[in-house]
Length: 257
Image (cartoon, rainbow, N blue to C red; front, side, top):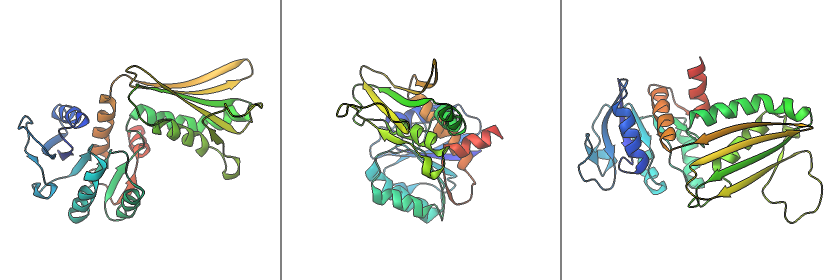
């Protein structure tokens, strides 16, 4: 049984993950950490992470960037593995995560979805085959009207997965806007387009457009719960792992066997 702590337990994703863990026979949510608590959780909640009980096997973090510094302090002091899902970390925080991974196990991914990360592996393997046969590459991502950033981090991660399949001198350039130029499409570019509207949770299409045929790899998110399930799978993977910086591709590799 893996003892889990939910950091940011009263946030939307913290509550989703708590429900998933409660139904998982291999996991035990022993505590949560949050600034405010009304006592509704079936486990004790601490406003100060340093008050956590002993016996924590892994921490799942879905909090806010300012709370991550204290989390990393605790994990370094206790040697506790952490699944780091909070976005918007500063350059300094990311550098600390990288340095701290020499001491503890840290899992951080641009997207916690198992499906998206499997798609990335497929793209790395097969994009060069299609590109070498004259297929142009475009990415279209769609999200709800309230999303602030564009393009999405997942769209960039998918483009990076495509580029990973090519040699260093053969990488593609990312293009976000073609309105200022009047010219034919260059061969070595990936056009990345963002759609914002309604309540779309997240759609990503990676389009390979060839002569007389189009191949599209798609991923559609119907709720944010999928990110919670990915984080739970990551916590099972990370518990007991040696120090290192892991991502969801490592989880996929273990699942594939």
